[in-house]
Length: 187
Image 1 (tube, helix red, strand yellow):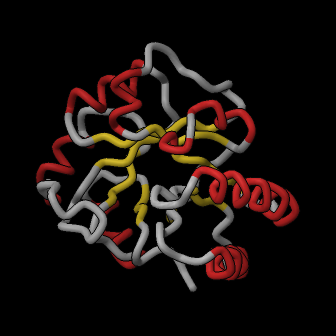
Image 2 (image 1 turned 90 degrees about the vertical axis):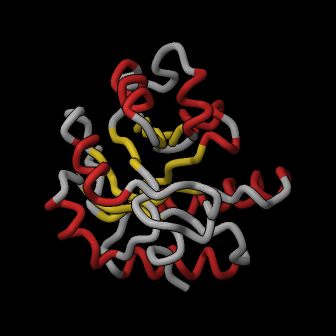
């Protein structure tokens, strides 16, 4: 499965209706890939949404990656799983089949090395800039991002306070693509 240059991540606070409308918008704009990450929802609501999204995404031929926050056991039920940095550090071996996508959130050179050991398909490297969702994280900026990109052959997504329009700048600094929540998800 080919990974895209633009990687949307679901916002935490959108209603289910807004989420479904956004998926239609993504499809209309040829964005056929996204990550489900709804950390503030109750588990029963997450399970309900995932059941609904699985059917919709299958019908619309959209790849759905689930954040490991919702449970690593979901990996093989969808197109793949994206490991939080905490889950990345706990993993011993690749936990999903090679047919499914495995991604990981990285913040350090050690995280990148761990992701390589697990043979992930891509990594997020963040945060580039300050973000609404991670106010306490220190941004790494483009210089540090570029240095870290040179230490891996994995496809690297720039994440954190970016827009889709930042793709060109990200690529100049070694990124494969850009990912985000606030400026990447459409309502």
